[in-house]
Amino acid sequence: MTQPDPYLLRVLRAQSHQLSHEINRLPAESVLWRLTAEEWSVHECLSHVRDVERQIFLPRLTRVVKEDNPTLAWFDEQAYHRDHWNSAEPIQNILADFVADRAAEVALLETADWSRTGRHETRGPLSLAWLADYAAGHLWEHLSQIIRVRLNYALRPVS
Image (cartoon, rainbow, N blue to C red; front, side):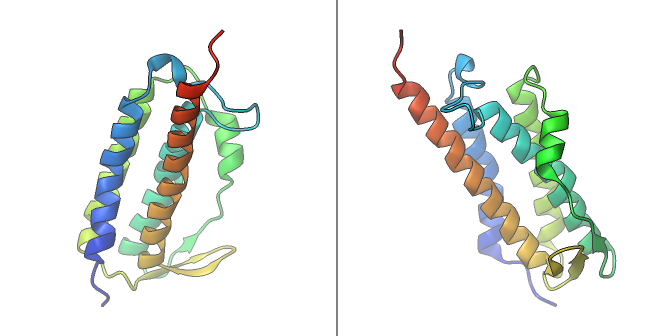
């Protein structure tokens, strides 16, 4: 049995606070603003992060903890975002969903055997430790996007 990584558990817990802090710093009118037409707004980034926690990370972690070597289906997160993003959904609701899902993940991980694996359809065997690390990295990637949008929104020329 591989024990949970205390550092990574702290990171996963702290990320909910970091994300909440960042979202609560935003002016309400900025959540749909885009730096460029090709980049996501803060609302889109947060929706994506929530959707990935809810549709990918939490179900995969749950299955790996509770089942023996489950098959982990490939998930088209871009198509899901395209088909489900709702610009009218309140950003605080999205944030609350993420925080709840992340707390459920941490609760699962705190007592689990991190050497347990599932078999991803395209990536092959994935350990619980790898999944936890990937979840943390995924949020850091999008948290940096959110920070960059916030900072550029503050510097935008106002006409």
